[in-house]
Image (cartoon, rainbow, N blue to C red; front, side, top):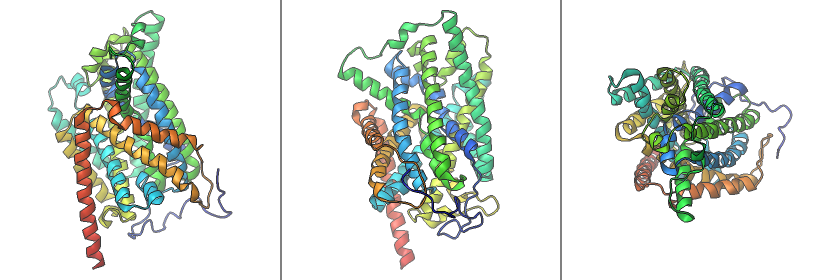
Length: 461
């Protein structure tokens, strides 16, 4: 700890206090420590492990667990920086707020905010497409149009988000427990296979690349960069700071436990998947864990597992939509987005304009993207943001605050920035279309920045 809260300083602002410079009411503090831990776990678990495990196997081969182990370490490094910053500045704007405080360059702040928003929406859109893919087909035999399912999926999530944070987070708890049960089934199948002598243990050390040295390194980095999509989510939780009770004390435990639990589960699930199913079969499915269930030698109904997977994908999308809308709210309060984005629904006290805005953007991505490309785009955008956040935590060490908060060892953000930059670079053997998509999004962000500047000038005039 690098500061002590002054005696008599309240941990949270009064419930009825004005919440923002826009004059809107404060967001409701409805999230306690246990809810936040489940929120973080539920945010990380979901689409990544349920839908992209096969694509990672297609890049790295049977040694599927290696990219997830590396991603676990990278996630922990950056999570430590987020924990320090959210304790220091418990506001809803997250990475964009930290960039603004550290560098005081409004254009950079806006771009960071826009990249975070787009990453959340591309993740939610990937989840919508995963929802309408192989897992749904297992239940409906392809009777329903996937595009229609994905669009309806986004609209239902928007309605839940409008209902309120307490309802959304409680729904998250239920869905988190369901998706954990699905991964427990996979681990149970793996344990049975090991005890009965099934599977192919030799696959666990086989790499797809036939080369060595640089070719092998870029192959593993490429698989890690895509697999990192499974770890994104912990950064979303900091945008709930204004709806969390005593955030400076609650967040460190919640984020570290959440990352540790999910990282351990991911590595074990990857081991089981590679043990039981060859990489080619995994790579050919957008429901790879369903292939594991079918190959496990255990009489577990594939339809039931498909239903569990649908709940898991729903959880990821719900939280990403919630975080994107809260980011709009936070940026409106910082005057980086127009004030209208901070409009709160009076009775429900939810950011209504932000929710409508991000839902429309998500629908656009659903109609124009595909799972692997959107997942890789999510990882790339967030790795760039993580590099900025890791530098920001070092720059902001000179800024003291009047309350206690977690302080991460200096070496961790240094390593976090370096690893994020490497995974975001061409060394990760990322397809060119991911960079093109990200570039188009950034150009869109620059256009929005210019429009916002003109609007601010109009207000002053």
